[in-house]
Image (cartoon, rainbow, N blue to C red):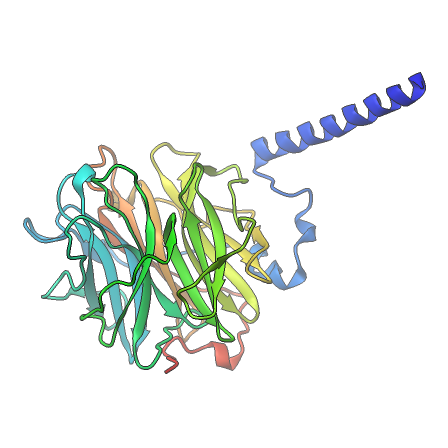
Length: 368
């Protein structure tokens, strides 16, 4: 009996040592798995290659509005569509101090995705109570990230909250538009505690990934629906903090599916530098079990560009006809953070491994 007790103690000590060793590796090197070799081979091209995002503009593509405009103090959360050779970029903008900000949705258009002009009737969408904000809107998209219209209409989901209220509740709503300028009344609440959703329609099913903000730390979840209104939430979170660079929260995700592989960009506070955020990348075969890139974060603040020296998140990503990817993201300059976000920027990435199927190459495709 004493030998058996000793054996169990020895086994327990070995397991404890193993987990302590694993934790030490995680702290020192950001390891999140005993072996990246466990990654499915289909994901290797995405996870083994570096993401060299090139900033190809000399300044912000969208800046704060003039004093008195709806976006003269804060702007973030770009949502981009490419249709008929034209880019439309919607974004959230607000005036006022941080505690009392109320975001409406503005629109800007561009022929090349880099030089944008704001719509003269901005904001093109705001809530009538002038208390609740429109936050982190997302378009319904095809699996490859191209815009998906239903009966000729754009369909968006967005989070909403009253920053001046007492409970901080974030709720999910939807709206539709034929031209991106005139929008329907928002739907009743579909879900609670939802922020920064992204929605794909795959084989007739709506799949949504979103930030669950009910508790700290924020985590990323998945839900699906037969109509885009009644959602069934997957029990387990799909992404949590488990890499060295991640700190505090996960937020702002973008998902698409390329050649059967789900790819995801997401944000977190960057532990390497105080008061900064950065963007990480992960890949999956089913959209539920994700494998993170070992070189995360793949897009980081640039201290040499004062308008994006600290925050780079709340992104929108589109795959272009030449198989490159273009990202639009919001940024902050150095503290004090008078502006929750200060500017919207862009960058491009040209993967060297891509061999996409022909049917996956056209982000101008819309389904009616």
